Length: 419
Image (tube, rainbow, N blue to C red; front, side, top):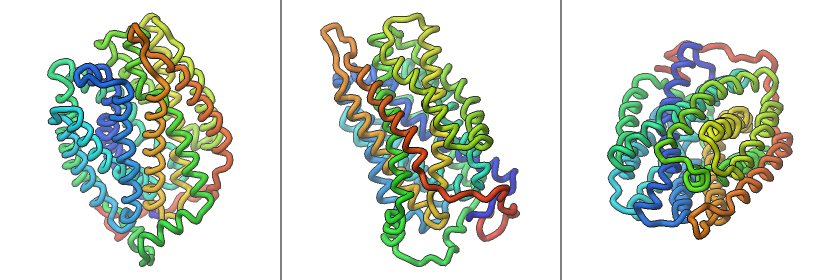
């Protein structure tokens, strides 16, 4: 197991990873509230917009498969930053895209680099943080989701209102270059997996990962959790503006309110998962998430305050499932194979998101008045997947963490972890 970083360095590592995740999540999330603007400007249907969202996630899934052949062959910091700078360039290309086709191409490239990068962040957390603190660690890193909804998405939408949708992606790219430069100084070298004595081909590592029944159960759990959200999330803004009557200028309020709430709830859920058990907390949070997940698909015109209550519950509990969920998944693999496992798991994650977006796009339509139809079907599909995940999480086979088994802290400067 990767020796634990000293607590000060561990916290610095987690905040740096959260900053990288922030830009990656904003880049992905901002596409969805831009849906009404993009469908109007490019003259595309809701299904074509769903394809634009799916292209990113399906490309990320494909890159995860390729990444599984090399991710455990490189030192973590170097590989992460190379992918991150390539991702920043692809995001800049999104901002410069003059047409739907060019934007689609740039989104595929961003997904290719971002897919491996996202799973590598989770791998580094699992390498550096012992299991008994990993719930809180995942809460810190996944608080990037909250910060992206509090600051990133509203700011991007504000830029889009002022200078057009291109400005959102250009700004994300510039921030990414700055954070990448910071990461050169603040990220530690993590290379213990290179000193495990394993000198085998990547295909042997993949074969070993795929031979484990426990890994297949973890992959199935990942697919259920991700598909649950993405049958509804990509079309939420379109539904709010067309059926609920939310003005486009108030869309940032939805993300601001949800982000502020999850900024606190993600870390709170992580602490509860470490204290009461990750399976138990996942089941509780996922069960509560059923209410906003289905309820929001039935909302008609309501006061903005009512809408904000429902959407904030949606953000808190739908995203909150991921904190204990990802802590469980990171424990499913042997440390020496964790990068390969997490890359394959990232492919499953991205593929599930992409397929769910395609299914959601196929279930919805427009009536003669331009209102979205069939969105309730998306909610019920999400509910069925949630119930399946409540059962499936109990079937995960995870190695038991010894009680009070916090590995000895290792000072910076060793071969395994150093500045």
